[in-house]
Image (tube, rainbow, N blue to C red; front, top):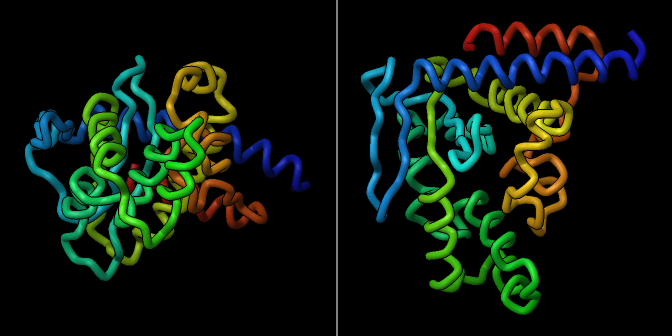
Length: 223
């Protein structure tokens, strides 16, 4: 299969994976949203919260809800899924790339504050941190994909982040649904181009047909 054909096939498969993942987490996962610093749980098909696996962040301000970030915890961090999710809500931009990206989008047009916000060793100012938390509470809810095999987390995260990002710039409906998305003005061009609050793995593509088949097998095992 030629490279161009492979990429077209991958784009097609990515759209299918995106919708399958969205349907699965909306049907089977408990949903967590935030209000006033408190977690609100909507237990749907699943009556417990997974301890290990991936989290799927949804933009609840659009309909249908759109996947805007996929992430996980370190495979060596046993039972680390929920602490990782709450880290995005209550910690600082230096502990959460999600918060850093949202903050840089909020500060678009304010180069002085933005340059300070982007410094790794600089503590985020309270006003911007509060604005990030407020945005998360108003726009984001979290669903989960349980994965018991910790060694599978890294590959699965890579595949799903790439598939979601690829689908977001491929599917006409997804392209339209991000028209007013805050991340369109994010300082990180990967975020603004691909429409997700991820930067790692976003541009990953299978190098050949064998790798594409491996990716599909891995994803189908869990969704």
